[in-house]
Length: 210
Image (cartoon, rainbow, N blue to C red):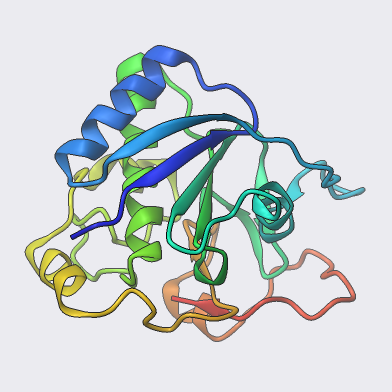
């Protein structure tokens, strides 16, 4: 069984889009409730105006996280992590939280809602212990472009559905950051900690789990 998630909005998503995304996610087994706005004090990169995803997520949920409740933060900000030029979302299982960026998902209501739903399902899948899936039609498959997001279905494949039911929630818990949809990087490169040409912050980057 997939644990329900509470949705916190750093910036408000258009209500029709969010309603559609939640309905599609519910069909995939991901139930959610709206928990209002969340605030944070993270600042963008000086060179790109992007926000570092793990720092932003940690700041957003540090005061509101719950040990037995999953949190999903929605933002319109463009996100990155030190090893990757941009991400659509990340999941941090040690926080029981994930974040999804709407920045690159835009379109009309139907297109935007469907893309957002897939990202919500994907990140909640990570929080429930799933890795990226080799089935390109599965919502847990790795996507490095919006076109790849559009190609996959808004649901778990049979193997991923079975995996969710087969392992405990604390699998691989700890300081693990799961990255979704990194521009220009394959699963293997991300897993090995390959770095983009972007200068990395002086701090040690989080372990990337594929």
